Image 1 (cartoon, rainbow, N blue to C red):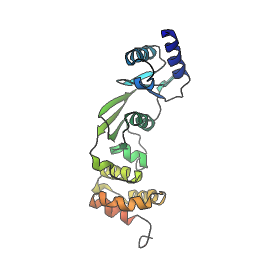
Image 2 (cartoon, rainbow, N blue to C red):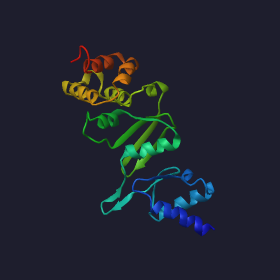
Image 3 (cartoon, rainbow, N blue to C red):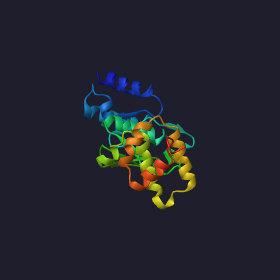
Image 4 (cartoon, one colour):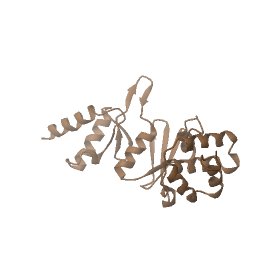
Length: 203
């Protein structure tokens, strides 16, 4: 019986796609303690990599080292498991929205779930429990834009940044949500965003 369980779990992982995230809860039909032990064994065998307590990932081994999926994909999977929401923050938000082309070594997200740190090779992912007001936006773009602008800082916004804001706003399908979400943004951000929105008086 045990051999059958080992084979089933091993096969599921072997047939999983690159970047697949596995939790003990990924195998609810089996005993939790037993699955925990099996995942630890599979980690030692190099089939999966442990990235946090109870969180494993199917990474790709290359001659240059271990190749992980994108941080955003990984954090999204963890958030799904936790039934939580996430928002990139700081330089992570800047990079996500294209204000910066530099990929931060240490990425950060606000979450409605538990705070935690995850290590991916030489990179650190920080999930910090955020206050409900950060998640009150109806528009995903506004959620991330507020975090990116906060990271850049009111006195550091350049003309190039404003052009980029205008481009982001022009390319979204969330105009109505953005218009209502403006009231949730700090006054200085509201002024910059409104100035760069298309519409009557803004052409």
